[in-house]
Image (tube, rainbow, N blue to C red; front, side, top):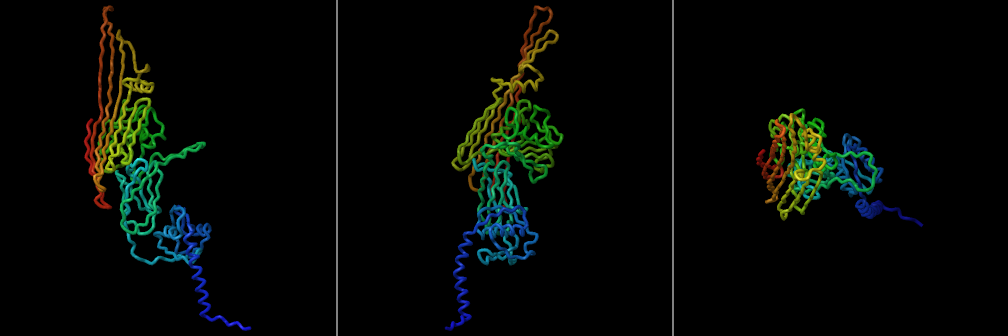
Length: 488
C-alpha cells in the first residue's frame, strides 16, 4: 500500500491551523497573567532576570539595550501588558510578545515625545482639610514639587507614558497613584490617610517616628501638630517647646517656650500665623506658647537663610498655617489639662466652605493646681505655693500673684467657585496678671499699726486679622493675595 507524500501546500495549511488554534490559547493565558513589580533603583537587567525566575518568562534582548537603565516602581497584581508598559516607561524600549512566555525587547522608534501637566489638590482623608507644603513627585525621576498653602500642586512637562505619582506628607501614609498622561486632564483630588500604628499587642523596645521633616529649601524644617502627642510635654501640648528639640534652636531655661535660633533672642524671630505677625508669642511668662495646637495644621521654621519675602529679621522665621475646617461633616472636640481647657468646632457650610472656631482658657484665676503653683514659684523665685512672706525693718509683706490667659481662633473659608478660595482668619490672645501686695507697717511707737494693700493689674496680648484670596487662573498659574493686620 502506498502513501502519497504530503505536498508543500498541505504542510503550510497544517501549520496555519496549529497557529490559529494556539492563538486563542496564548491570548487567554496572557489575559490571566498578572505581575507584581517591586524595584528600588534596580538595574533593568537584574529586574528582568528576577521576573524571569518568578513568573516563568523569557526575555530576549541585547545587553546594550538595557545598559545603564534603572527602574524604580512598586505595583501589585498588574496585567502583563500594563506591567510591561510601566517597567519600560521612559526607557526607550518597546516589546513584542511572541507567545505566552517569550517577550522580545527592541528599541522604540524615535518619535516626538509629548508632554503634559499633572495637577491636583491634596487633602486630609479624615476631615477634608487641605494639606499645605506636601511633597509631590514622579517616582524614579527628579520631577517633583511642593503643594502651596491651599494644597494645590502642578507638575509641568511630564512625558507621555505610564508613571507613578507619589504624594508624601508628614504624619500621613504616602499615596502612590498610577498615571498615564496622554491628554490634558482635570485636577486630581488626592486624600491622604493618617499613618496610624496598628493596635495589636506588641513588645516595644524602640520606636522611631518621623516627627519633623527637612524641606527641599535650605534651612527649612516642617512640623505637623498632629504629631504632638508623640513628644514629651509639660502641662499642655506645646508647639514651640517641640521646636526646641531641633538642632540650632534652644530655650532660655527649663521654664521657657521661647525660641533662641542661631544665638538670637526670641524677639528677633518673625512669627506668622495665617499671614498675621504675632509679636508676643507666649503665655504664663513664657512657659506656654500663644498658639493652640487644635487650630494649627502646619508649621514651618527657617533656622538658616530664608526667602527675602519674609523681610530682614536677624534670627529665624516661624510660619504657622491655621486649620480651615472640614467641609464634609461636623467636627467638635474638648480638652482639659492641669493648666487650661480648650474647645474646638468645625462646621461645614453646605459644601461651599467651612467655619472653624477654637478657644483655650486657663482656670488658674479661680482654681490653682499644683502645676500652676510650681510655675508661679519658678518665675517669682519663691517656695511657698505662690505666697511669699518676709520681714525687713518692721515690715511684713505678702505677695499674692494671680495669672490667667486665653486665646481664640476663628477662620471662615468659602469656595464661591471651583477656581476661587476665600478665607478670613482671626486670632486673639491675652494674658492677665494681678499682683496683690499686703504691707503691715509697724513704725515707732509700737502701738501704731498701718495696713496698706497694693493691687497691680497688667494685661498684654495680640489681636490679628487676615484675609486671603486664592485663584487658579490656569493649570500653571495660581495666585494668592493675602492682607493682614495685627496689634499688640
